[in-house]
Amino acid sequence: MRFYRPLGQISALTFDLDDTLYDNRPVIDRTLHESLSFVRSYHPSLSQFDASELNRLRQTLLASEPEIYHDVTEWRRRALELGMINAGLSAAMAKTGAEEAMANFAHWRSLIDVPQETHDTLAQLAEKWPLVAITNGNAQPELFGLSDYFRFVLRAGPDGRSKPFADMYHLAAERLALPRFVSPAGGAAGAAAGAGSARWGRSDDRRGGLHSLRHAGLLDQTAGRRPDAHRRQPPVTAHRNFTVGISDLADIIVSSSV
Image (cartoon, rainbow, N blue to C red; front, side, top):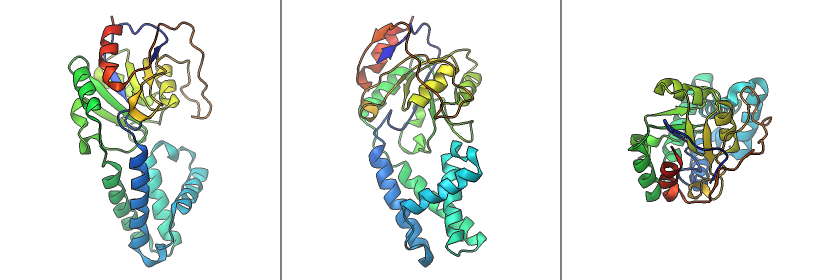
């Protein structure tokens, strides 16, 4: 974990979910398999529906609606509905089928095995600060035992543009009536960029899922840019430099704050 400036006084903490608090790869692999099986069995004309077709449909929608990527759940639902219409289902059948397919998707998407060290760390931090989950994804923490640690969960789409845009960070601060945030755990450089544009410190976890948290720091302004347009700025001063497991996070955050 690297802090590129002193943490200062912490008022609240934000966490990404996927690949930060748990390893998301097995979840995605299983969910894709089960959700495609559901679609193929939904109607005979969909028996050959596969991941490549789903991706093609998503790209078709993205080309005509460039902002749809901010809401991955709606993007998937619309792609499935379009695929069913293309396969010959009526508009009404396709709408119902897509909704049922998304219910199946949601079931598998939130069957997540959360390590005990994640529970222990969140419980310890939640005793000292309000915690908020901020995610671009569609996992539902209430279904895998994490929701009680968070004051609320913000999702890209319903709650603003996806990270690295800073919408959800600003909304979190507004809801908590806080002028500043420190976010210790985010699953992508884009999340760091969003936090940086909101002028909040945060750290980043990209090594082995949840199990190491690193690259903390404040990045330069990126709000308003497309996700592929932001670039990490080099740190001016390294205040601390750690590589730690999530079980050590609470102690480090507590000891590093003033």
